[in-house]
Length: 224
Image (cartoon, rainbow, N blue to C red; front, top):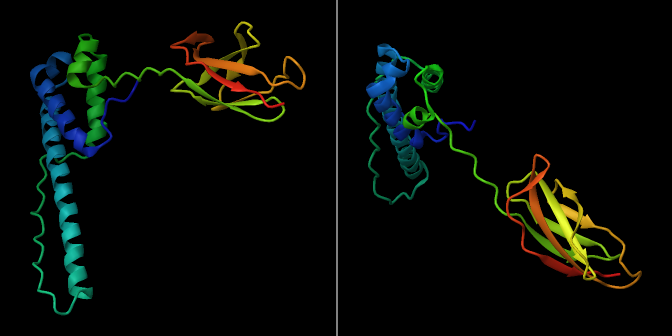
């Protein structure tokens, strides 16, 4: 399952606000205690305050660095810069550390409750985003010496790619799967010493079956 908890601090502000609101409206019905619901609300406030304070401290740090640079290394004739004002003393809303770990615990309680459904998970934000569907792969063919053709594969999220080829007006044939982004077609020519046109296409493979769209056809003329 994809992770539901946001990586960035800024994204956590909105996430916790929603989680706390849902906990306040239906958290007890889905297994949370009254103390846990209250804690979820305190945590949401703490996250918002702390993210804002972190931004403020970062801004002050930049201002102080600029002030100190002017005072210590600046032009002797420059005007005296204003002294940056430190941020106000931070006041804790929640005395309990470990907000992320506690939130994951609350999410686990909700998921384990008999009333849990995917809709409940979505409303609380405790279902991770679905993995993006793999795109259609594509090929780039480059002729090399000895009748070899190098295929550059844009795999588009697939682990394994099936590659087909046709030549001499014949039918498409599989020339092998590729796990890597480069595949060398080293087949000998149909007529020894003669150039030939080779067409290529590819498709993703999942659980030993071809899936998704077929790539556009690309061609190369071999160099004997």
